[in-house]
Length: 227
Image (cartoon, rainbow, N blue to C red; front, top):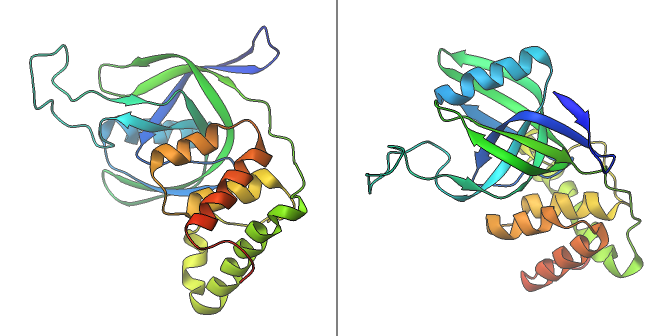
């Protein structure tokens, strides 16, 4: 269900959520292997309706529901908690290789902020959320050319040496090489950084600042500059 808000931004009611130990970025691609009962029905319904679901990054707990090792709480399962900023995911492909297993590939759309969350009895999280406005395209300034060119070079190297992995990357066409947010997001998905850091980058409202922080990270990893 959708509606407007007092700020003019779109809100979604009872959006189903998928908490993960990783971060989906707007414009990125992510494969998911679905086998938990709480998600099989949800993904099936979203796919049939052409409706999105939300991906949020866990701050506590596990992707697969586990029993509470301490016991004695209101629920027999371990606590799950997640960050309040997530990204809408649109299912682009779905396969059923065997009963009780779905293989999907989804694309990140726009960010959202969780206003109210609820965990249903069978474990599925749903939330009322407010969608962020689409991020404006900000041209890549000259001093950040190195970050953009290194990403282009990485893609070129993969095409030449490992073309079979290209379809699995979050880096897919259409390429937006002169958009700070797009370049920063693709680097953030690829870099070996902790999920907490990726979450902070994704949550930043300023795409230029996001790319500057990514360029600093590339520099520390010895990956900045033209290749």
